[in-house]
Amino acid sequence: MSRTASAIYSVSEADIWVMDTRVRYIEEVEPLRDIELSNIRSVEGVKWAVPFYKGLSTIRMPDGLTQQVQLIGVDDVSLVGICPRMVMGDALAIQKPQNAMIDKSGYAFTWPNQKLKIGKQIELNDNRLIINAICDVNPTFFTFPIMYVSYNTAMEITPPSRKKMPFVLVKAQNELDLQELKSRIEKQTGLQALTQNEFAWRSINYILERTGIPINFGITIFLGVIIGAAITAQTFYIFIVENLKQFAAMKAVGVTNGQLLKIVLTQAGIVGVTGYGLGIGFTAFFFKMTEDVPALTGFILHWQVVAGTAVIITIVILFSILFSLRKVFTLDPAIVFRG
Amino acid sequence: MDKNLQDKAIHIEHVNKDFPVGDDMVRVLYDISIEIRMGQLTMLVGPSGCGKTTLISIISGILTATSGMINIFGTDIGNMKGRDKVIFRRNNIGFIFQQYNLLPALTASENAAIPLIAAGVRMDAATKKASNILDDIGLIGQTEKLPRQLSGGQQQRVAIARALVHQPRLIVCDEPTAALDAKSGSAVMDILRKIANDTDKAVLIVTHDSRIYKYADRILEMSDGRIMGDYTSEEFMNKERE
Image (cartoon, rainbow over all chains, first blue to last red; front, side, top):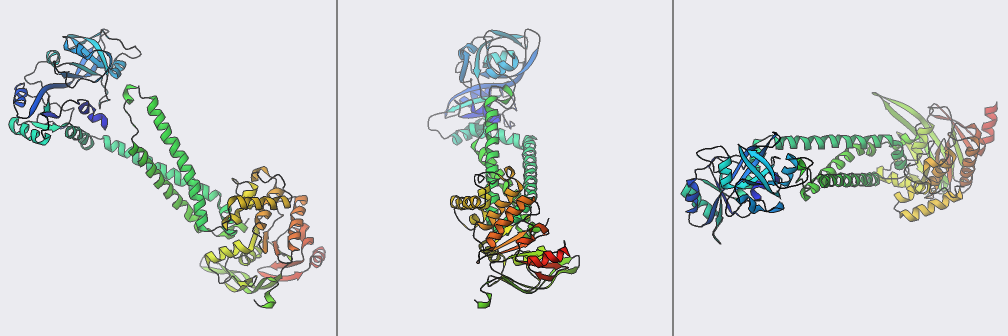
């Protein structure tokens, strides 16, 4: 989910995002009139306000192949919203006409198996662009390459329209309460103003509520737990049934049900910890090995996932033990004398 | 304790046992009364299904009789409840089974140490004691082997060590030589005979194996849930020959 909001968190300089009232998440663009930028700048408490363009475009390469990209246009002078981690070239390059910057993963996606190199030429809506800088961005929800240009360049190379400005980024004057400034902007302009965190969570919640992604993930996790529990319970059950005579012999020689429970819990604990360690280890190894694969970049093993998995595995093991041990607890040790 | 009971290992009177079969109850033991003294090796013989296994299960506190008195070493175990019975078994009875029933993941000494570990003895002390007993019964150098690395006779000796390690006074054996060749069977019976010579112990063996009758002090013959005869080993072997 952090991918959904990474485009918002990447813009660290601004306190408030201003947008049309109908915008529900970062990928939904309802352009504003250019005059709104001046209106926002006139609100008391605004230190600065700059336009920020974000939209999908299609680039064409010299060999004629096309590729969809996320085009981001940042303020020509301040470059607020520009990618902060440079890999090659200089971010200031995009201040020049027809210059652009692409993210490292997007470069690899667009030109597979090619070394990073600045100077590549592309075409966007019949405009020539030169890739004069390469940067490293946090992975976003869509895996399209991210192309940075200046705001003015973005206005020139995107199709003409009466309204083209999707967002305005605002910095509050020192020590001014952001909620207060938000209210002032909304009251004075009739637009929607959200803090960085509010906009990020609104975007995440939109994805959670309005797409099938959480349901698909939820079903996958649910099925994983159910199938895992069933297999574990069945494996334990088979282990118990195959060793019933041994359990009966132990009961006959004076091992109590409590002691048998301890034995099985110890065995289950060892198996569980080993399996859990291997599973988490392989997952972490997979993430480490694929950190440079564009489609998989940014997967993080949060401690909450590690802890949650441990809890689920513990529940599955306890369920399996209870399911299987009932047979041992009610076992008649006299069966040990039967042939 | 009643002076009369002092040298009696087993004293049971009028024991009956019924098992449910469908809606009915089927009687498998009829009015069994026997006394077995300490220092005796007693065999229970008879055809399959005559009730031998049910009788030793009741004597060893694994099954509960439908009626009758069961007194083992002066303790009436017929009225004992679950955990008390388990602890009584743990302290007083050693078991040797036909199929050994050793735990495959444990070594010989660990298998033999199970009753001590169950009684709360520390693992290292329990396995040390078990190793000593394994050495005594001829398994020198085999104590760290897993059951699958031992022959049938050696596995049965591990089972004997398991039955002896907690120094029980009654050893109950179910067909201890059935799965063994003649040589291994003799070795096992020599050990059991030696145990039975101890005036503080008694050995009760269920068997079909005529090769081992000579080791018995006394042979009880069962048929259809009843004790049909009480013989010395010579008497029984002569009867069998006739």
